[in-house]
Image (cartoon, rainbow, N blue to C red):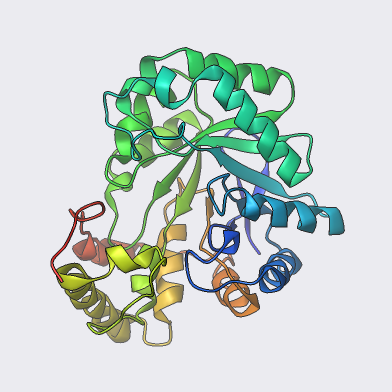
Length: 330
């Protein structure tokens, strides 16, 4: 495992982390706690020392499983979790949202205490907002609450998980020195962060957590026009109708390119190495559900990025989707 410095914290984190959404329940298909814990243990065996979770992953169940893991392992593990917006608040938040409604100070502190209890820890390494809006940048209440938690030693870094379609909306808070880390979608299709957000993060020394390196699974190359997902699976809405057909068509173009220039590399490996190749990135957190996925997804974390010439050619695959939260025809 190769390790990278996480922003200005001085932490050395594994460049492949453990994305813990799927172990929270059945949102990505049937999942057993036994299988989840085996995957977590195997990830640590292979050198992973960064785990990303959230209160919203199975109503805290993902955090509880990580708490069980941490009781059984002696390794130093960095844990990032998230505070959800208040119940009933729109998610993602509209850009003019009132931070006092979405993230009141008392609510932030209450949710932090709940996560600490589930994790069985006295501190959270990176405490992130699970959605963001441009209007939050100039608000003070959330920052005062987070700063208080920091001063008390309950959190070590303030993070923001930026929305799917507006990753730049946190730049105002970065410029004001309010945020230590950003979590963002970045993959072969969703390349937009490299234009604005990543240069700012590099300049300011912001930690960068990359999520969705596989585009919710499409960049593994395993989907076809006939792929379906069961009721309750988070991919059921995203990959259907004309959206699915458009994704499959573009994935096949990526595959054709890979087969020509990197024939020995699998599609998942290409996707992970692409996400790891930008120097702003601190860690990439693919979702991991079992030992097989742990071993396959962690293997590319060996410190070998894609060549610059390949990265330049892969700019052709950039695709800013317009259907993240849009109903589609069957």
